[in-house]
Length: 388
Image (cartoon, rainbow, N blue to C red; front, side, top):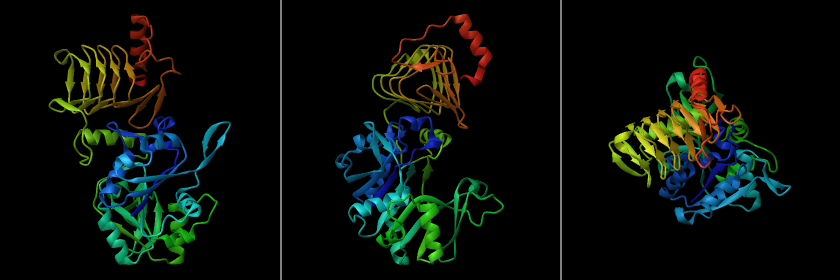
């Protein structure tokens, strides 16, 4: 059975992470989110998978290659061109990506599934496909019901009693929402649907193809299903996803490593004197990370591999990517650290290098920056949580 994973977007709302990591490669406790999707597809018999790529395409291709080690076959459709020896992405839209693959050679010859490459899901795909076929639908949206107060964050799908789609509302106000069922970006299609997608132009599934199907009164349905769906659309979503895994709220993701104490997991060869640090789980500490004496870590928190947490530093309810060094006495609460960037849980970003604060947070592979202790203390007290 055939499927497609949408992986060509730039992920602008997940910056700064997506400056160097494409959204499908964003790690959930060291495992790319797209790998979970491949496991789900394989579990339900979808073993021929096309992936459209554009932004940082080589990162995705070099990790997953032909899919052999994941038990599937993978092909890639690159959207872009080479300029001055550099790959430049030029995405053609989610529907345009489907059409591009079909124009190259007719790949979609039977019922197929399309998934966004940036969500954790545990959907019963087999049951969804069965329902789709029983309806005689050419396109089916998998919906999820959300609390009324959350509808303004999503695209709302309005159906009749039979599940036939009547209309869409993009992020309506709570008062205007005609439904609490939202579009999860999980679709089931028949090859016939490709006839309604023009070739060679940018064309989106949600904003272009679906309204056309409604206007045509095509057999176009949606089904609400109860399943785990963690959409990593923005940095705060990612922060909440990691927190959910550590707290055991996301059941289909296991915490890696070895549990050295209740709620405390580590990768290989972590350097820490357990009786000289204060660590409260749930916490994950990646391989080859050094935690100096006197450091404090309060979960839920993730510290990636090859990090260095200096003496007196505090990490609380935070996510720290690999190769990060937190200076002595730094207090990191409700933050995400990615390279030279520090992001709060609302998404506000500080470039610590540009702000000349790299003595607070720097790359663990660099020599520790020199800073006069009294001057450092004065700056830290002045900036307080704005800098940390």
